[in-house]
Image 1 (cartoon, rainbow over the protein chains, first blue to last red):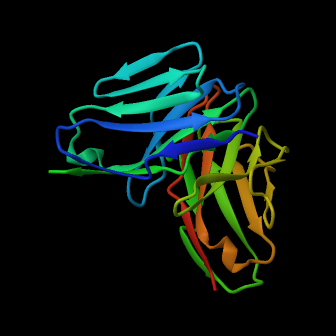
Image 2 (spheres, each protein chain N blue to C red):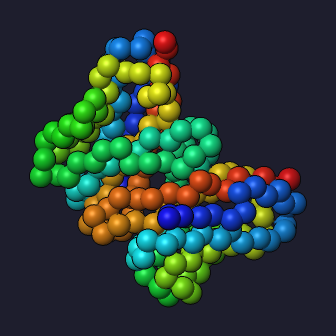
Image 3 (cartoon, rainbow over the protein chains, first blue to last red):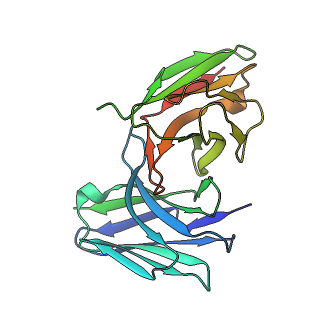
Amino acid sequence: GENVEQHPSTLSVQEGDSAVIKCTYSDSASNYFPWYKQELGKGPQLIIDIRSNVGEKKDQRIAVTLNKTAKHFSLHITETQPEDSAVYFCAARGGGFKTIFGAGTRLFVKA
Amino acid sequence: NAGVTQTPKFRVLKTGQSMTLLCAQDMNHEYMYWYRQDPGMGLRLIHYSVGEGTTAKGEVPDGYNVSRLKKQNFLLGLESAAPSQTSVYFCASRTTAGELFFGEGSRLTVL
C-alpha cells in the first residue's frame, strides 16, 4: 500500500523567512497530493493540493511542487507570519479511495 | 452549516468497555473516513465508506468496527477498549474532487 514520509518533523523559522516541508510517496499510481494545516484543537483543513498532471501550483504565499519521477512533493511558504504556526500534513491518494497522510511537521514562526 | 460533527468530544473508558463514536455530515458526501491521530504518527486511516451501506478497512482496522446505515452518518465502534486505543479520532467526509472535510476530533482515553 501507499506510504508517505514527511520531513522535517519540526521546523522553526523567523517571521518573514521561508519554510519548506518535503514529502516522498511510494505508490507510483498516486495522482492527488493535498496539504492540510491543523491548528491546535481543530481538525486538519486543506490549504492547497496538486494533481499529477501539474508540476507546480501557487496560491498567494504558499506553493506546492511535484516531481513524479522522484516521487517527491514539497510545500513552500514564503514571508511566514506567526499565524502560519501549526502542524502541516502532506498526503497522497491513488486511484482508490484512501488518502494516506505523512507524520506531520510542526512549524513554529518566531516573531 | 455544520459540516462534519463528531460526538462525543471527550470520553474516558476503562479497559474492556465498549463505546461508539458518531460522525454526522450535512454536505451529502458519499465518502466518509475515520482516522486516528497519535503523536509523531500523523493521521492513520482506520476504516472508510464509499457510500451508504458500505465499509472497508484502512491501515489500522483491528479492534474497531464501523457502520454506515445512513449516508450522513458514519459510526466507529470499540467493542473492548484497550489502552493502545487512547488517541484523538477524526472523522472526515470527502468531495468528489478529493478534498477532505474533518470534524473537530474526539479525544478518547482508555485507562
